[in-house]
Length: 382
Image (cartoon, rainbow, N blue to C red):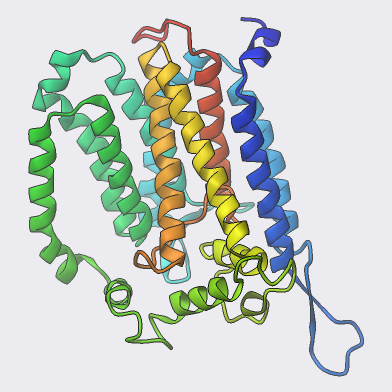
């Protein structure tokens, strides 16, 4: 297939939505930046600056776009053949975090490579989708009925899940389970296995509550059940997020004019709670438009998957669609107080490197599968 043909088959609507969200990310992170006033008799700050967030995010977007176009226009057989290897490499990085990980904000989730910190738990999500797509792509209905054929993919999920829980990163770990459950549903896992899994998960809840969760994680869940129990402690973040988003009203306070975020009442305004800052400045309308963009992107990916003529590409697109949906759904529900507070970034919006690059890699794989949607593939990459 020539480059001109690939360009003609490229999914421009999905690419446009991705770019719009990335632009909104930089615009919002610019608002989150502050500059001290020069020659002021008293400490003060100007709101709106390229540093420390927007300029850094812009450079990562530039790197991500290079990766995006390389992956999107490459041969899909490359990614088919390397799926297991990519999963294995990502799993090794997740395991390494346990032994040589960098600790920050009370959690050990990063690897310090000297010139950059990476978060392997973000990389394993895309790698897991690739590995599962490769595993299930060649199975027929008879194979999918056999319980033994689910042992390997369950192990592929269980190992990184346990490693990530230990970091601790409960949000990413639970998201992995949601993505896996959705993936198993898509491939046609027998209902009996879902029932068994549900029963085992229910039985494991007391063990997880008393022996698996940290004190602060239990506090977050209790605060979700009873929001007013500790407004100066475990409930501070979510309470301030509700105040900030609610104060934006219908049209918002205006760009660069968010008081809760700029006056530092809102923690993590540039990462997990960026949707709250966005809503405070641009109001309900701004928040609705952003959610609409996410929803349209999800719908486009669902449509791409339905049109796919090769099973590997179909599962790849469905898997990333699930990953994308789960993350923006959890983040928005979290900051609005509809779910307990967990460390889940808002896709393409939150400040960060590993999350952004892994998502752009995922979008590139979706585009690659879409471009090659009519190509017939074999288990050996032929």
